[in-house]
Amino acid sequence: MASKDTVVFSIVFKKGLAEKNRLPLEDVINTLQQIQHMIRDCGRQIQRAAGIENADGDFGIELIGGPSGLIFRKGSLKTAATITHDIPHGILAINTLIDTTDLLEKRQKNIVTPDYAEPILRRLPRISEIQRENRTELHLALSQNRHILNSSKLGERGRETLKRFEAPEVGIESITLYGRLRELRDKTRTITDEENKGHFWGELQEDGGRIWRIRFKDRDESKVLKLFRKQVEITGDATYFRTQAPRVDAADIDEDVMPDYLAAYERFNIAYRDVFGDRDTEEILDEARG
Image 1 (tube, rainbow, N blue to C red):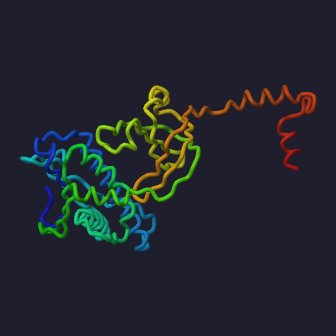
Image 2 (image 1 turned 180 degrees about the vertical axis):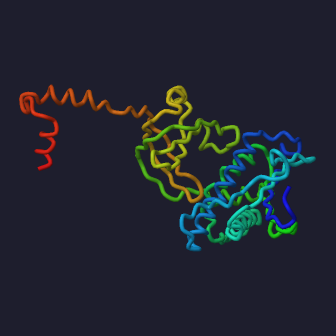
Image 3 (image 1 turned 45 degrees about the vertical axis):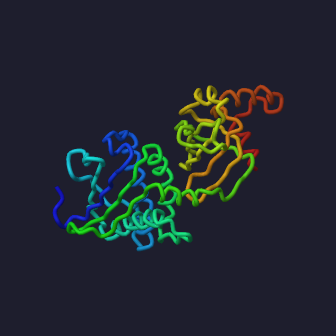
């Protein structure tokens, strides 16, 4: 149990499926993970600006309020967490999240986002999608000494405002990506616009860690399913967004098979045996390097 002096960050799911106390556990966990990532990404920027070495955005946030940290109440699901270290910067990071969601919900014509809000705007669409599926509102509050310092909600109005930030900014034709196909999802049950009919979605992670959203055609479903969780090569047109991971409309996908260097070396030896004879490989490479 938290003491009266503890800084507490509460997250409440209301309306929609929350009213029936039947929220999918996966959606709750995904939402909490995205919130954690937003706080850490934002916090990392705040710490760097403050001159902190090895800024990691880790504020030791721990769930409180019960063994699971989740409390079902009539018509809602609540979880609460406390900041255990670097509290001043942790408060600033959480306030940035709350202020950003509050601005979106108020639907101001010209939105000026808070400092360090960029990583929050990049991840909020993922939470917004979960909310849209479950028809829920997300209520956030920060309190200290049992006094509420700041609060906000993200509901239907905020999600509509967020769409304004999702407009495509830059398009590049015919790029090729290499990475692991790590997620597949059918969004057609939640997306009503004509542009997305006949498609399903995936997520690719490049070796460097960058995440891409991949939009596949339904006719390619059997081929894509065989490549799920494999290293793949995807070709298509790319679109970059302000608040979302970039998207590629997949024109082709194949397994990215690692080259067989031993076989290639053997073929090289056979093809150029008359030129190099029995000379050692290292000797040939040294000569080529000059």
